[in-house]
Length: 572
Ligand code: XUL
Image (tube, rainbow, N blue to C red; front, side, top):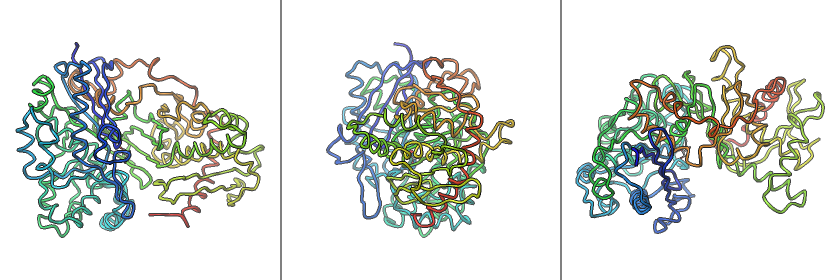
């Protein structure tokens, strides 16, 4: 078997891994679903929920047990672990793991005859749970974070994001408020990514330079912890800032550099080579942008359960509207991210309505497609008609922080006025185009400043290439409207890289880290082996002259509509 490189993905719902060769050919995939494969933890979607306090958390022991099951399964299927030269991985972002003082010692002296979970679960942690990114319990802490820095914009300037409930800084502060003694007993705090990395390393791994930006604690431009935010998080704690700094430990600054060799437990139990190198593990979103040679200003639009826009950019242009992270492999580049709660569910709701109105009882998209084809930009018949703008949030939304609801407005571009009404709307037919347009207009509005013409050689404020992934990318109508709204001066592409983009990105990272020539950039390494024809199908032009400009005018109305909705529906 040729040398292989493994990427792991520890997500909310499961643990996956994928092995590739040095020329980036996938050779093996394995997956565990927590609900199904570790049912004794009683989780749903991999988590427990405390609805009253808006808490969402996962059992750390379940993740450890899942790793043992996954590797056992992989061995049983004949995978030769001695071929693995390097391991990297990705974790759901923002979650934290609380290690005890004994953790390092336990990790360093694991018995290969005993399971990982049995050896770790009782002594290695001070707290059995990891807060999940769906947690909304830190409103008080978020307010304190913004107050301490002079508001959301100022906090975003420092850390790349305004305060968010799920971000690790506010979560740690809440943890200390509720469990001061447990906090003091905690020797180290890992992110989910560095936690998984630690298991392989046999000691606690440093935090990753990209994933650390999901904490509201890291000063991205200063390349260090923000002292004021550390002091705020450690406020009233016995161990103070020094204690918190020690718990957080170092951040791995050298992207792609080896952290150490694999722990003996894996060598003896599964037959890994003792030369197998452990590389930094990053967040799942940063890892996803590593699944292709994504160039600066290329955008990935992920149309899954949630809607996500990911972009690599050389411009540090922070805003309260989105997130900026350090790029996981390249110093001086940043990852731009918009992460919406509403995606597929909202579109499927509209699809079901149109199907019902046509007597279609299945979940097919044909009627949805026909409704798109029989309408024009913003549901107008003539250019003097008002634009129909709809906002559809079956779930409370993050961007903007709004309650759930459905709103329909007419916008008159001639006098810039909006009216909440269904006048002139042919329902449910007109909701079809409106829902795709509104999801795309929100992304365009929020990425506009970053893509402004002076940011890249006089092109209009649009991405270079637009890459679609996720379930929605199987739907031509959804992709074409989204592309027309956002533009993309080198066209729209459908990515075909399997359903494991995040684990794939991590496996590419491991291969690049160990096999790159000198200082070869990550994108150049991936480009060497990237089969454009198989992995990225060009679906057409994204920018359509006239149409993109017309959407620019509708976006002005969309902005006013959103402000109006937020006056009475904000949940911040
Ligand atoms: C990003 C976020 C989610 C998780 C999903 O900020 O919270 O995308 O990373 O695992």
